[in-house]
Length: 398
Image (cartoon, rainbow, N blue to C red; front, side, top):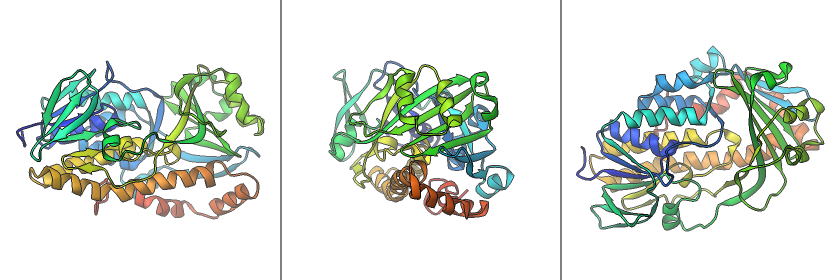
């Protein structure tokens, strides 16, 4: 083991397990402290850009991750008022050649399972459940996590990968509750045969309308379609996974074209999330303690980069911990310095995309259409180079 004490990671989601795997591959012992009684993921589909595949490869699970993914042909933007296509961005061989990896969609639980299997197979990683980290103490040479059971565990570092409402963030940043966006997102997964035949596209499709949008794409080897519909209804309170009737889902979409609206009728078992994020900050570290993933930089869904950024964090953290040769505090400063501007750019950009691409109305929407239709495929690739061309390490590309 590279240090006498292990690295402690609060949180066993995609970010926490990615960090555990990356650190273990660099020779560190790791203890993952998950508050839930079982390691798993809720939610359905997520989109993963080439930068996520760069991270998979770095973490040694590239082949396993690729086996779980559905490789879509394009990103397709539809006008939810007229029913017409605005633009599509091909994701074929030129895209893969440009960015060194594909764009795909995957079930969140399948992705988490790939990381969990790799962690379970690694002797340097200990996974503990029912182990919520409430706080910590440090003395300059070690950090001690305070666990809900009353137990204390000592490590060389503590990584807060404990999500949007991170206990460790509250100690470091103290910014209270997350910012409620007012965007209500309803999710459903339906059998492929329930999806209208003329919409069974091998694409991540976005129907963009005034204060609303619909997203759909195939998952799990085309067995199901993921439906995500969002309505900017100024919802005041955060909600996570609450079951709702279809009548509630319909409310925000009465004004869009029937072809798009009918997609909602095929959904079942709808669940509601009211989206939240936080403003970017640079106060990610406190001595031997650092934040990662949603605990550091929670973001809106509109860049489809939440999981990707968490995995990039894990790559960078693992690299810096090895590079600094046991100087944990220097490693965490280096990690923060490499990650804070890039993730902040995604946080701010996601808000802007929601306003200017997903939800504009009237002249604002017409301006969007004209600008986006004036751009070539290569123009889009150029605009995405900063995001998809990076490995998550400063100064490196695919």
